[in-house]
Length: 100
Image 1 (spheres, one colour):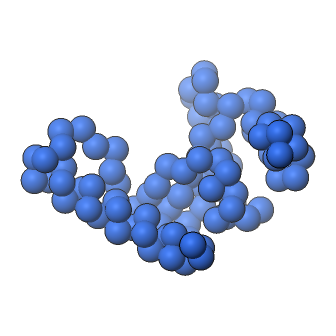
Image 2 (image 1 turned 60 degrees about the vertical axis):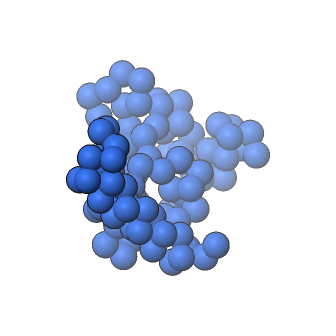
C-alpha cells in the first residue's frame, strides 16, 4: 500500500471508529479523527527522518515523535532506549532496537 493510500485509510478508520463510538456501539475509544498512534516502524516509514520529538512526563514511554501528513497527525511513543537509538539515526535504531 502506498504512503498516501495508508494515510487516507487511517483517516477513514478513525472516522468510522468515532462514528461507532458516537452511536454507542463501542463504549471506549481512543479514536481521534485528527491523529493516529502508530508503531515506531510504521511511523518512521511514513514520516521518514523529518519529524518532531518531545519529552513526556511518563516513566515507561518518556518520548513522543510526531508529524503531520496531509492533515493527519501521526505519533509514536518511545522508551528511553528507543529514543537514544533513534537520535543516532534510523539505521542504527533499526539495527540495535528492532534487530533488523
